Image (cartoon, rainbow, N blue to C red; front, side):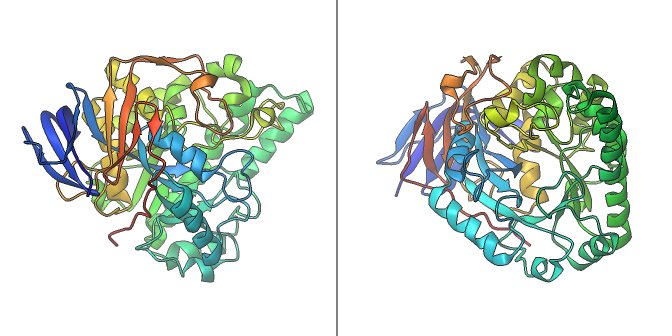
Length: 445
């Protein structure tokens, strides 16, 4: 039995912050109180007044395994995630092969059971022709269904309206969607190719993958969800206009349609293409400062429910191609939490609201069992943060297999010092406990 006592922490949970101690026994939080006496054979960690938060539950990552392991692996990226305060991730189906059958999905779970430092689940990938397989997905053991309504890889673009309606009508599981209208994007790309040939400047990315392309697709998905009663979750909103499609007048638990925003859309704007180039090429695109501010507003007033990274690494050689040939996506899990803590320091968001969006709400939205809160009886997925220990991001301190970050050169004010996963101290001031692995999360559905 392993027992830890974290003393003198600023505990952040359920919209309050208070000084106290947390006792961990085996996998679980045994006690939360103002002062706890350490039982025998207990490892005591003095938090020295630093923040203790529940681990970030990241509902959208691409860890590239199987099939794309020159970019990343479940082992390398989950290690970076744990160092970054992410204790649970939900990974996407667009690997090679794609997780579009139950057998292929379970093979990914087997890799994670062996290699993942963090807790994990995976989404089943919908296509135009796998409805029968999709309906076999176990809602208690699998996070949900992922549909690409734009920007797909392989055969994962679901563009048959009849099929879409069948999927939306046939499952009560959460359907998570990537929303960009392909016809609009193709038309915009053709216009810029006519003008620039193969050398389209990267600054036109948010004009090609435009506000209109996003809004057309997301509004159609929402309309279909309302028509069919489907449980819809719209990934990575990138425009202020789209936020108007979502409501904040009912509790999250009662919402049938929810939304996510990613760190890069809250941090960067289209002026950053001048210095960052294709390194901040994402789909959907980073757009205007007005969009960035609109996304923050919607996050704070609860039209947007959760935060995520959409961590999607590529090699530097791949990213350094010209605009048309550089793939979209970038690595983010190692610095997501400390980047968001800068916004706490700036007064943009409170620490309590941040924890709600990073930890509580993903647990509620996906109905994850016993995670996302600092509560007695819950799994001890905990992160200790020193907000007075600055760090500068450099290639030398990156854990990603791809070896680069869009945050290189940025100095953050905070450092994650300890990360507990299921009661195990997996990360301790730069050192990893490699003897334990994360667990497959389960769902209260």
